[in-house]
Amino acid sequence: MSALAVLKKYWNYDAFRPQQDAIIQCVLDQKDSIVLLPTGGGKSICYQVPALLKEGVCLVISPLISLMEDQVTNLNSRGIKAIALNSKFSQEDTIRAFDNLQFGGYKFLYISPEKLQTPFIQEKIKQLSINLIAIDEAHCISQWGHDFRPSYLELSILRELQPDVPFIALTATATPQVLEDIATEVPMPTASVFKQSFFRKNIGYHVIHTENNLGKLFQILEKIKEPLIIYCNRRRVVKDLCQQIIHHKYHATYYHGGLTIAEKEASFSSWMTEKTPIMVATNSFGMGIDKENVRVVIHINTPESIENYVQESGRGGRNGSQAYSFILTNTQEQVNQQKLLALNLPSNDEVKEVYFKLNQYFKISNGELPLSVFTFVLPDFCEAYKLSYQKTTQSIKYLADNGVLTITQHFGKRSAIIFKVSSDYLFDYMDSNPSKATLIQLLLRNYGGIFEHFINIDEAYIAKKLMISRAGLVKYLNVLHTDAIIHYKQQHNIAEITFLQAREDRYISYQMKNFVSIKNKVKQEKLATVLEYINNKDQCRNQIILRYFKETIREDCGQCDNCIKKQGNHSKPAEIKKQVLEALKAKALSSFDLNASINCTAPQLLEIIQELLEKEVIALTSQNTYQLK
Image 1 (cartoon, rainbow, N blue to C red):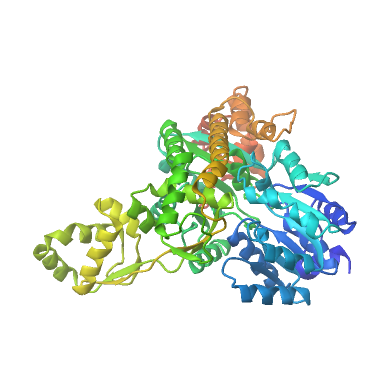
Image 2 (cartoon, rainbow, N blue to C red; image 1 turned 30 degrees about the horizontal axis):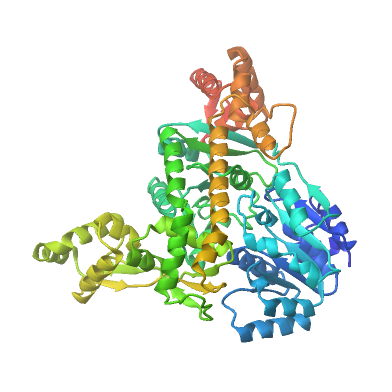
């Protein structure tokens, strides 16, 4: 069977995207390759198709459990047998999985770089007939990448385990320095490098400086009827903004890492089918997203890095049609983003303290490597030791990234409540129990429909509003439950922690010191670069982005806000009017479409449109587009 036949059989595609054919042939020729394709470039097919054409199992190294599970689900839905080994697997489950792999039960094995480090797993991999080793999110190898994972530096062990197997390393965003690190660390000294330009000719990059982010957002929503994504930097902002959008009679849904699997799937499906064409999300919404007709991507908060921004904005215009990327910003928003970063970046001493407290919390003595998997509720841990939630979260992530421990989230259903009494009875109860009145009023203000059906609640958010501990809030809610005022279903979003190294406080502290310093420095520098991009009001935005990735284009893109502003400075009203009428001869267009194709500033264009409307030369349609009258 040919590569194209495999593509048609499993993916129902009639042709490969640019460069995929050459990459696949390189793999089939048993050569190493490094693949840099922007978001939506079809990286997965570059290793999945050749792996299906060869005898044996394809081993895929991937950094995120959620990403591995998404890939496995996708392959299984196409009739391709795949499995992801994660911390949920017992020793017995793992042995059974490798038996199936050895005897043809699966074609793809997904595994994290941390799990790869155990001698048992290494021995099992050595026994397998591996046809290809794919390293996904390969930028994690470099400390200068935007998501460095020290465990990726240990992948060279695969060369010893499977010396004759070709490697393919894949990433969507990498500077030349990161690509060099990938080739050095795996190692892949003779690898063929396949790069596609980051230039997206159909995306207009716009930065809007406004003191009224929300007002500007609704102006955009009023004009855009196709699917779009709004990125926010915090889960609470995501939910609140989605509720405001729905309140304004738009169909929206939201997505973040704290939702249950069922909630994520429901939200994703609702957006993909365009029942709710507006998706409000954190940057956890992105891996594997392949919707062709996304028209607009909006960042309501400052992106964390140019890499993130390019990946996220690149989810627009996959079908080649005109798309737009907007960053809504102002001085206060930029200051807030810098403060938020500072709040989230722990010092080495703070990471050391969290590590010490974790061992104390789980009663692990010095020199001990516990074999147990510990159940862990982060809010309870922070409350017990009076630790910052944000810095503790980041400290544990740093410890996990550096191979000290692993942490796996197991989000179940969130806590939910419903009022069991009438509003009249409730007011009488509040009069008789004034100590409960503030909590009840807060619930009524923040959660609609709470008398009709169960409503999911966020205990941490409510406790913060009331300025009490989470444990204190739970106590109050249980009293209301006992008094038959509410039905309270309490659930815990728990995690599981596995320690990978024996407790050695001084050694771990030394091991983490340089790592924490580099991680913090990289995050600060990347945010500074984004702020420079945002506040540059003169240069072509495509040129700024490409320069970051050491690419160059000689001409301005002609469609970003800075280019349009420069073009508009030379446009006369008569010329603008002529261009508008010419553009509308073909079809009705929105002001966004006109702005993308007319050489003028937005205020100039709006002035001309208003004049043509008043003279009844053009008319506004019910779809908020303009047409010749």
